[in-house]
Amino acid sequence: MMVLVLFLGYPLGNLIVTSFYNVETKSYTLSHYMKTFTDEQLMEVFGNTFKLGFMTVFFCALFAIPAAWGVARTNMPLRKTIQNLVTLTFALPNFLGPSGGSFFLAPNPGN
Image 1 (cartoon, one colour):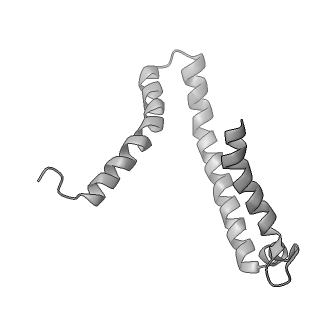
Image 2: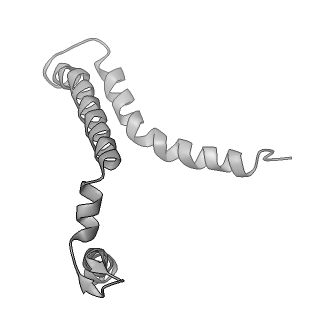
């Protein structure tokens, strides 16, 4: 537990405390946050990010919830194939990332 506090809690706490500190006036203030949340261009970026995130969750849930129900509650055809494909989505990024990195860094492996 102490290791978690040391390596996670201290840097996070330091980040939060220093985010309120103004170097010019050498005092704590909310001016950084006020400047951030009153910037129109940045608020547009936040809005686009939330829209994209909401639409992604909505459309993924639109397909995933019926598929999960079909696999769990019915005797549908290709049930085992769907289960294997879902499992593959968790394993594949862990394999493709390092493979892509090794091909990028060493384009002629074995030569």
